[in-house]
Image (cartoon, rainbow, N blue to C red):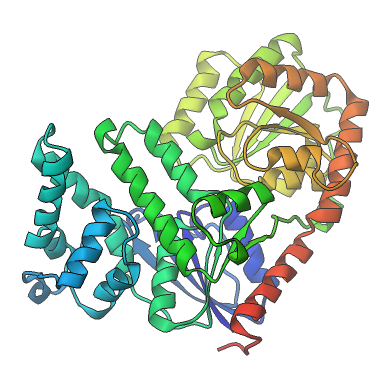
Amino acid sequence: MKVCLIVEGAYPYVTGGVSSWVQGLMLSMPDVEFVVQTIAAAPCADRQFKYKIPSNVSEIQEVYLLDDDYVDNRTQKKITLTGEEYDAFEKLLFEDSPDWDVVIRFFAEKDISLNALLSGRDFFKMSLDYYNANYRRVVFSDFLWTMRSLYLPLFTILKSRTEKADLYHSVSSGYAGIWGSMEKCIHGAPFLMSEHGLYTREREEEIIKADWVSGIYKDIWISQFKKIGECCYGHADKVVSLFEEAREFQIELGCEADKTVVIPNGVDYRKYEDIPGKDKGDEYINIGAILRVTPIKDVKTMLRAFALAKNKNPMLKLWIMGSLDEAKEYAQECRDMVRDMKLADVVFTGIVDVKAYIGKMDFLILTSISEGQPLCILEGFASRLPCIATNVGNSRGLIEGERDDYGHAGFIVPVMGVSEIARAVLRLAEDETGRRKMGEAGYRRARKYYDEVDVFDTYRKLYEELAGNKEVV
């Protein structure tokens, strides 16, 4: 069986939950050939693989959303849309329910320049008509350039190469899902989409808060990502979510209920059986944060809460374990914050082997403003550690349990709730017996319901159901 695995902003250049999951999935199926199709914002000369690529990966194909439009000069000629194409593009830009098959076929069948398309008469006319009807209070040139910049990444994906495979599997909706939808239309093979987060909702939250999108254009950006989501849900044969609430949200966004299936994240608890424990003589109460230092993880709230707790218990020590490279400016702001607050006993380790550190921790903490089903909580459970986590994604379900009576495996706290997080830190720090009891509850829960072996076996069965039990190509 040959599978195209499509990822956006992740594997193999970014570490973290989704990338680790992708690596584990491919390693679990050594007899399946994988082609990894990876989407990044722009080329980067010093970008390096963060994973040892499995031997069953035959190729890694890349596309850059903000790359130059490399085309032969002969294709820079004027582009004229047919009536059907014009209607499809106009609905795509400014209305609901575009005919995605017409748009996909346009890019598949014609060797076109995106510069010529976005600067062409038809794109200009449909933009001008919508501007005159809705946006005459702003400068037209600004409106037109906004439309061009908004649709360039989407059209770049639609113009990307395709690969003939037995199955297409995107690890999100968004641009990865569009790539999978396009390849299904062109090659006719089944398309599976997994959502580790809720891409459409996350983009909406991001745009609402963003400074780089002028307020008057936010609705257009949000509408675009909703239409992209509808395309992905429409073309996918199966849509996977990590937990029931996420599945219900997918249906609310327009996915047919009979396409949806819940497959949780998993952890191989066996790999954590012989991890090194706390160093002899270490009297600190060690708090572990396994995360990429990025705004969505809200490390600044974590630091403020730690500072409050540290004032009352000087034996606390915070270990922030994960990449500092994904959002370098934010990571530097966090380090500057530690310095300016004169906050002792905060360690930024960078990327490390989590299993070499996690056994030395007393409990974990996660203060994200958005999550799906955090793998770091499951890693903590596999190490018999409780966790403090913000009430996002499926954190409550993991910590409090959804199908068992094992008991709580930590505390749920409000997003950005500095004082509440600090109080939870102090409660766990001062109750060693309670920590052990909660850690054992998490361990039992991980073994029973979140065994990685079972999770990847479920994916194998889903692959075989969709594509048939085919030999490696």
